Amino acid sequence: MSDVLATIKADHDNVKSLFGKYKAATGSEKVTLALTLISEMKAHSAAEDASIYADYSKFGLNAASNKQEHAEINKLVADAAAASSNDAVVTKAVTTFIAHSDEEESQQWPAIKAKLSASESATLATQFVSAKKSVA
Image 1: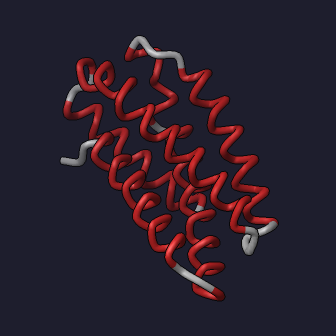
Image 2 (image 1 turned 180 degrees about the vertical axis):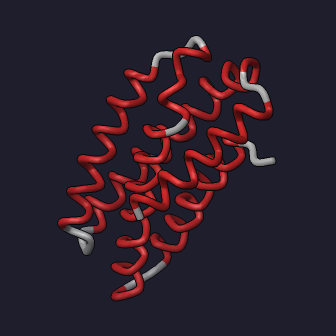
């Protein structure tokens, strides 16, 4: 049975790993990694919006600030998509995404873990994965 938080954490960790490779890369490899990062962040935000954020009130959390942060990240990601060879623009999008994901994991997930049943978690994980595929 899938766990939605483990699924989302794997996604967060994937972006962090890609960013490490991006920072070390040069030339066309750097642009390719930028495009991959842009695609991953865009799909991730949409998938969270379609799955776990839809139920945030159930966990005693307000998804409004997360959705506002996603809107900001999506704008930065769009800027990065328009300038995938601009290191500063791509880096700003990724570092903002990482700060947001770290905040989710440390400040919001304990409340979710306390209230989420295994079956609800599995359902949300399925919704997250399918929403991510539909965007990609």
